[in-house]
Image (cartoon, rainbow, N blue to C red; front, side):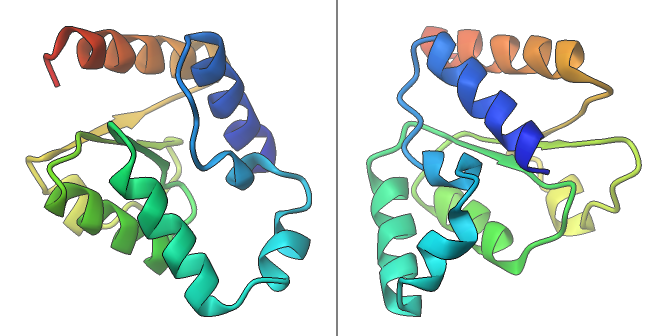
Length: 127
């Protein structure tokens, strides 16, 4: 999924957003996180949530950690957008939550349109 994560981060940066958890798009993430303790990873991710205006999560690949971050973001009152490809088996806890925007994308152009729509609404205070 790394190319998708990189594309999302690149587009958000291009749109003028400071992507605080850019490390997810780092080709060396396994090496980076392997040098951190569990507590450091947790502390880093929670700090990033506290300074963020929203959470955008790619949820095609199920992750307990991402689910936890989504829950914490909602607890902080952050708008949450979850993205996934059509073949993903997304949890009902994500799909059924009315406080989460969930969007299926079918390619880069479609993904870009979804992100532009979400970020425009974020800027306008409509999210």
